[in-house]
Length: 130
Image 1: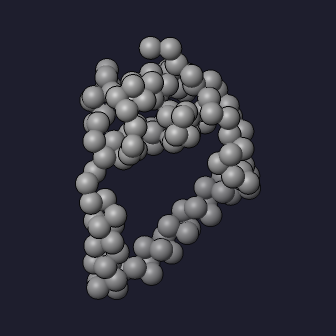
Image 2: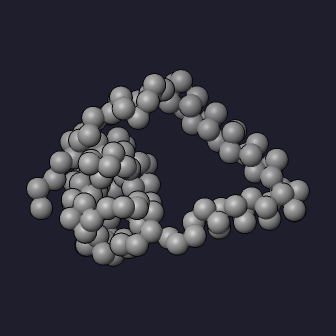
């Protein structure tokens, strides 16, 4: 499979996802799962089965792109096929997320979870020098 991924290491605050070239995405046609560093490659692997409305050919290309990016960023990839990552998006994902929010709200954990997320994003921005 011919890959389309090429390294692109522009970091910092992007004005839009459109600032990135198609060649940095695992799914270039859909512009899904950008891979600009090792962390994003691992994220593309973790979210592979969450990408919807793509063909088997799109998944094969995405996996080939992930393999190439993983090699470039020295990310260990134990999977040998896109089928190892899953082919079907998780059903009822939005409903599950809404249920999780409601559970946190009932437990009184919603504000602390939001604060923790905001603190993490702030720390990551500071680490990037932004």
